[in-house]
Length: 83
Picture 1 (tube, one colour):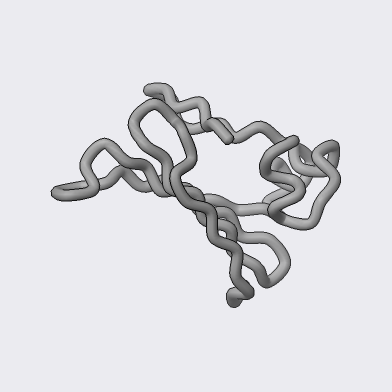
Picture 2 (cartoon, helix red, strand yellow; picture 1 turned 30 degrees about the vertical axis):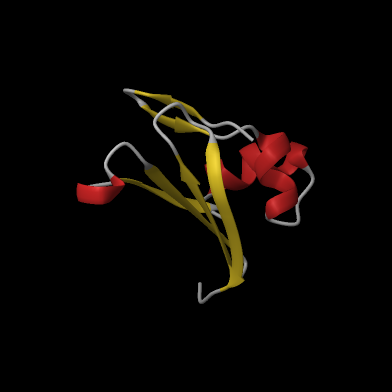
């Protein structure tokens, strides 16, 4: 999986994110616009410099993607989390 990283932020394709959140990809854009899916992007520092951590929350679950500088996803985790 690859994430598009640019100066304006990170973009994850709905076809990649939807299944991770248990959604059909077609549902992702509307749920993001409505705030049902929330997210955070963090830049790595020190030994994590050049990496990006993207976190998505939806209905009691958290999906986290760790990406390298070119957007290649190095690690994906999915857990139940508070909303």
